[in-house]
Length: 483
Ligand SMILES: *[C@@H]1O[C@H](CO)[C@@H](O)[C@H](O)[C@H]1NC(C)=O
Ligand SMILES: *[C@@H]1O[C@H](CO)[C@@H](O)[C@H](O)[C@H]1NC(C)=O
Ligand SMILES: *[C@@H]1O[C@H](CO)[C@@H](O)[C@H](O)[C@H]1NC(C)=O
Image 1 (tube, rainbow, N blue to C red):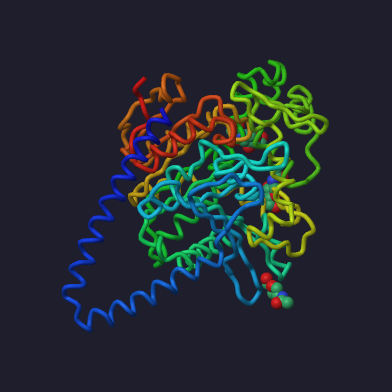
Image 2: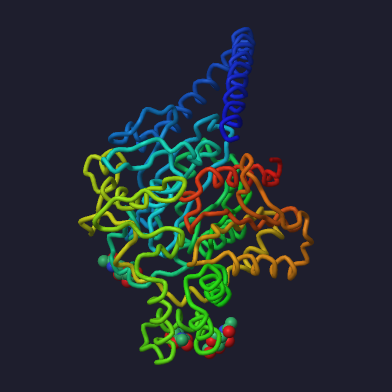
C-alpha cells in the first residue's frame, strides 16, 4: 500500500516538475521581451537577496554522514542560539522531504524524558531517514517520515543530546515554562536561518513527555506574534494528566497478564499507582505499604521486560537481539549510542560536546522540576482544537508507561467537556489488509488512535502503520478504512 502511494507521488512529482519547467521558460521569455532597466535592477537586488538566503542555511548543510547510503534529499544540522549572554545553544537536525520539499510541511519532532534526545531517539531509532546497524554503519529506513514532510528534530532543553548552555547553572532547575520559551526562541531563529520554509504549513509532533512540550509550545505560538503557520499537533503515548495516566497502568498490567490477581487487588485497595509514582519521584521515603506494593509489582513483571513495549525484552548486555514479527532490532538504541559518539559523525553534523565527554540518549545531569508532571496539559489540547489547530493523540497499545486506556479516556472526556460530537465513531483502521489499530474522531478535528502492536515509540515498533498514520494526520484525512 505504501509502495503504490509512493509510486503515485513520484509520478505526480515528475509531472509537476515538467510543468514548472515549462512555466519558467515562458516567464523567462516574457521577461526578456520587456527588458527595461527597472526590471534588471530589481532582478539584481532579488538575486543578491536570494544568494544571502541560501548562504545562511548552507553553512549547516550536512554533506554526507559517515557510512550513509546515497540519497537525493538534503540534510542540515547545527545550532540555534537561544540566549546570547549565557551561550545557550540548541542543536537541530533537519531532513528535507524525499519529494517536493518546497510544498511539503515542516514538522518539528520532540522526544520526552524530560531530558531525552530527539536526534538520538526520534531521528536515529524511530522515523529518521537512516538507522544504525549492528556493524556500525547506517541503512536507509524505508518508512522514514521525510517521505511525507520536512522533518526537524530538536534536542531540547539545553543539556539534552548535543544542546548545551555554557552557564551550567541553567541546568539546575529546568521546567516546562523555560523549555517552551526556549523552543519558541529556537523556532524563530530557525525560520530566520531557513526563510524559504516560513510560509509552509507547520506541525508539532512528539511522544511521551512531549505531551507537555508539544501543546505548551503550540500554545505559546498561538499567543505570540511570531508568524508560524501552525496547523496541528500529533502526540504519541503522551503524558497528559498524571493521575489518569499512571492509574491506568493498574488495569493495563493486569489485563496483559504482567501481574497477578493478588497484586492487582493490592493496587486497587492498598496503594494506587499515582501514589506510588508520586512518592517515588519525590524521593521521600516511601510509605511502607506503597513500597511493599511497588516491590511486589516489579518482582512479578520481572527485570527483563521492556516497559515501553511489553511484547519484547530489553536489549541484553551480552547478545544482540532481533525480535518480534517485524524483526525489530531491540539494540538499536545501543547502536545509536555508538554511532553518535563517533568523532567523524560529530564533524559531519557540526555538533560539539560542551561540558560532557560523551553523547548520551538521555541527559544525566539536568535537574528537571518533576512536580511539573502534575501540570495537566489535556486542557491545552482543548484550547488548541477550539482555535482550529488539528490534534491527533495516538497510542502504541503495547506501552505500559503511558497506557492507551488512560489516554483514550482523557480524550473522550475532553471532547465531552468542550462539546465536540463524535464525527467518526470508534472503528478499525487499516494498512493494506491488516488492522493497524482503532480510532475515533471528534468535531472533525480531534482524533484518538491506537497503533496496534506498537510500543511507546510507535514508529520504532510499527514503522509502516506509523507512517500511514502520520501521513493521514498531515493531510487531515480519515485513517484508511478500505481493506
Ligand atoms: C548564569 O546564570 C544565572 C541565572 O541563570 C545567573 O544568575 C549567573 O549570573 C550566570 N552566570 C554567569 C557567569 O553569567
Ligand atoms: C490514589 O491514592 C491517593 C492516596 O491514597 C488518593 O488520594 C487518590 O484519590 C487515589 N486515586 C485514585 C484514582 O484512586
Ligand atoms: C511531593 O512533593 C510536593 C512538593 O514538595 C508535595 O506538594 C507533595 O505533597 C509530595 N507528594 C508526596 C506523595 O509526597
